[in-house]
Length: 313
Length: 237
Image (tube, rainbow over all chains, first blue to last red; front, side, top):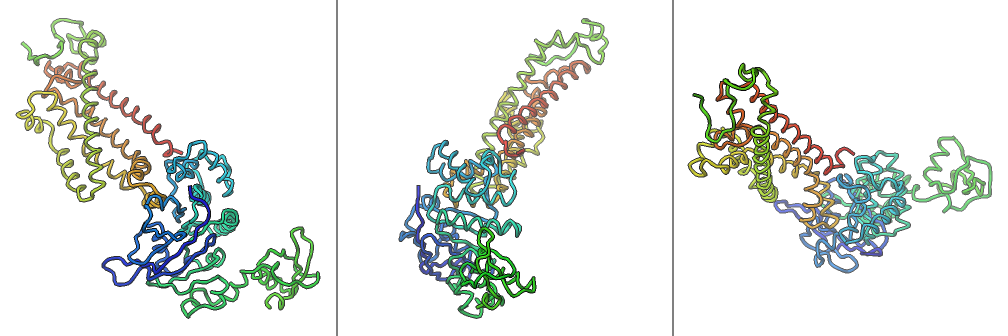
């Protein structure tokens, strides 16, 4: 079975549907370094999902190429290629007639892994995605939407694929559960270090999850491909600036936590943990009509302070 | 002199037997006891055979038609129309058409019975396969199932509830329709009913044989429900 993260390269990747003049994906070129999360974001009609499905050849390229660790997807056996790529979609698509364990074991079973291996692997993965191992014998209809998407994630990484494709995986989940799943996905990614292509239409989700963000405009053209920080600070053009929103300066504040700033000496103020984002800390100051933050460590001890001006410096 | 069908079972004689039989009472248990082994039980076994053969062959044909209609969408409308058409032919008329070719034989009866199962079985199978959610097929393909694996491991199992429902309806309706077999051959539970009608409507025999048809249908349906639950545990999970 596959192993470590792979580098993914889009090389002038183009998809044109017959009978249409405009391209769905137009000469897309970008490189996703091994182990990074690349978020494809943009308005509908931007070809995000098409670009994603080009990778596992659910949609075939019209021209250009896509390479995984230097190997063109065109040269690979279709079935082998897909088994080496984790695939998660918004509707989850768990197999309703299979238990959770059998769902998680889908790809390992295709690889001919024995039942006992699949059983222990699914136990391990259920724990990894934060579900009780007793879920193994249940059917998908007995789970909530959030739980199903966790299983979908476990299924996608079960065979340890070097590359994951995720098509709006948290799009149909309520905001509170979605935020929790995003956090857990980031924690999980720290552990498993996959190369991930993640499609969303939500710029906030893109900023939160992406190591890099690719913004696509209508007609499947790449408007900008950069780190969240760079996109928020230096949008390439009017379209990107508008897409990320007028509050992009505020959004940029969410990229940093207080721990990354130079703290003043401990002083009295509104107590806040240093793992808080600058954006949330600012919101707290505004809410409390205060000027000073007392920054605490994991044990609740005040370790430093920040004024509102220092926070925004 | 009463009219007796060739090869027909023993017909009660209004002149002899118990007073219940003589007076053609509503239900003569004595007659049922006397004629269970020589009339009713053989008819029941023959009836089950008629239905089992028809449903098995019908299922096999419908499965092949479904595979064709599912794989090649263009074939679906003609298959649908033909099975619709077969279903609408009155059985007695169909016998008339078939006898010159297949004679006074079991084959004639089975052709008729099979053709009535096709519509129900085909429709349920194809709808069952078509209604498998697209995203589930998408995930199956996207995770590296071959086309054959997608069909046998995902589409077919998910169509199973609909397929088995079709099997239930086809079985129950064939149990009922098979009572017309005696118009061609002296087999099945239709025969005692037919005989009793010929005998100035002998009530006991009609009620008993008719009741057995109903009971057989209920039992067969029950067994298929048990099978359905065993094969599709996820449906009620």
